Amino acid sequence: MGNRLENVLSVVNPHFPDATPYRSPKIEIFADQVVDEYMNIPRDSEQRKAREEALQGFYAEGLTVDSMGDVGGYRQLNHKTLYDVHFDDDKAILQYRVDYDNVAVQQKEREVEKKKGKKKEKVKEKYEEEKKNSRSMLLNVPVKASNDGYAVVSNLYFTPVPDVKTKGVQSETNPLAEQSEAPMEQKQQVENWLKDFFKKYADGTTDDLTYMMEKPQALNGQRSFVGLENTKIYPSGKNGFVVKTNVKFQEKDVAIENTESFTIHLTKRDGKYFVEKMENTLGGK
Image 1 (tube, rainbow, N blue to C red):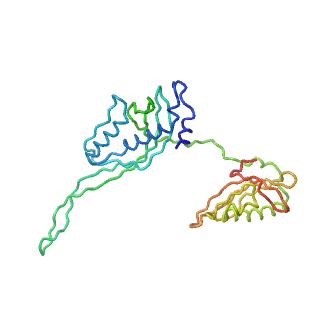
Image 2 (image 1 turned 135 degrees about the vertical axis):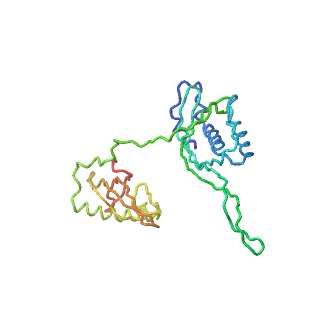
Image 3 (image 1 turned 30 degrees about the vertical axis):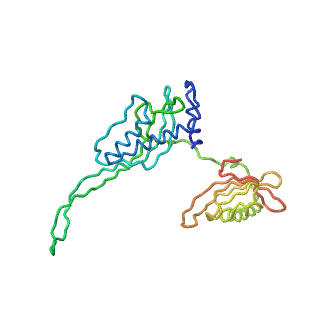
């Protein structure tokens, strides 16, 4: 939790007289509790009253929780995530993405057959029908720090979840694309070694890879190696190579494949290839 908070609080409003309370993980603990109480609205009137009293304990003096009568259902929070933190004057506004269900409960009647003595007769009975609608929004929580504690100083409010996708960003490319590759015979040798290496990488453990890698890593048998794609092999130094390749792996349980990109720095030690460095990118040098 602390790392997430440090990321979103990396820039604190310079006008704050003391930014320390707004960097503390305690502010997220406080806001988490507020969000849970605010978002979950019970159907039962006594439980709703208890919710209002609990929520009021988080509010600053003079700020009143909305009082609710029969809302015709209930609201249930399914998931929350701290999305961002903004600063406005002397308060922090913690934004949470909240995924929740609004559940409308309707009273209905239906005819059912009931046994009366030896006969069956149709009678009407009442029942409840629930209609669920799932929603996702940003819930904004205005919080001010004071006396080693926190309080909600303004009404919470909803805003749409923004689209954070962007266009115009180019994918990583091979910076060695203009260089000449290794001769075909050497390239074939390295490719054959790579196939054996990635089989061990997929099926084995880090201990199995100690003789092949400077910093051993492996998938511990969780995936299967399928094959190499678009493999480029460039000479590097006296006995080395830089490999740029895409590798296909597959799930063990079902035929779901994915492609991963690698840049691998190889050298020869005692006649055998050895991984000096491996990165999950085509952009590495």
